[in-house]
Image (cartoon, rainbow, N blue to C red):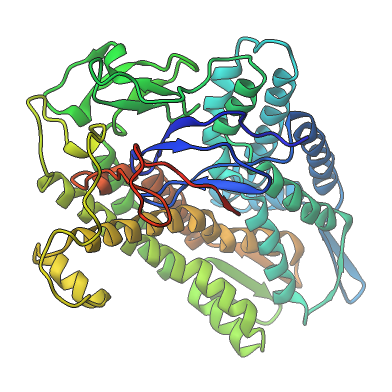
Length: 503
């Protein structure tokens, strides 16, 4: 049955700290932050019971996908078939390639299985009259499973591997691959079940406290603080906290609903992001110079780098697959490096040029709005609208209107969401090498083994994902005033009222 809230309520955007009033959502509607565009909530047609059925079906598909072979290969009467676990076992036995096998084991088997089992346990807990102990800890763990579950990337890797060897042998798609495809569809449905959605289900059933419907009294506090795990909105004035000279470094008591630690910003976000990013960039050099795969036959032996594999696919006529591999393995890591550098520079600049700080060092945009915001373009010089390059040049010189500044911040927010989405797809080449090593394994005739470039590239993906996860997107908005009006027609509503839309 459809599940949606029965009343309007407050929400704090986890990407920009905008305080929003989320209305009651109709069928098929979703609410997005009026400041940065992040989806806040959607009308979920599937409730806990329906999601439980999807989760059980996904577990069955997962078992079938790992019991039956993915692909069967036949060359001159010799037959090889491989399942995911068999491919991992073959790679583990190759000298020095246990790192590739371990990454594949975690991202394509252990963590997806753990995510499904954890979701199953959480959904069963929601069916009980009251939330049992452990629900809060389980939702915190679920947040760490989600980014590392890479079943869709693995399926794409299997398809690329099939294209690579299609001219060398007869290929038969096994039950395992069909089950893996069904699993991808089911996991896409289950991807809506993040920790906040699970807590909303608990809230709607009356098993836990609800978010406030209106702003707290300004006499008590000037700040609202939302839990990163369950989304519960706190009045910061009611929480015990360790005072710091810098408001952004404040450490508060734990969440009143799920007992998670509360922070105004992620601790040491910039330093950890820089550390992970630089490590990923250093690993990217050997990932492209060292061979990612080695081929041995009766006549010769050859080594293949990432770009070498792209060129071979292109020259073999599979230009579409070559383009996919180039985007996933070359373009995506480079784009992530550039975007993270831009975001880190923007966050650093925002820290240096924060608008107003009160006696405690609190940035103005964290305060609750007390008056309607000025109309767009009311501040700044009166001139014709500039193009994007012109706005970028003005922004670099510090000469930018309020409207242009908002657009620049929104563009950065979209870039951050983009690199969050594409992060795991760079693992494609690692999965391709894994499966080729299991299929093309005819001792004395032809054999494919993983190279040290695969380890370096896999670690590059891991560290760039950690860099994106460590970055706090709210730092982009420090120094940018919060919205007070947020309707489609820029009518003044307080505080940042969200209007539902179909989506």
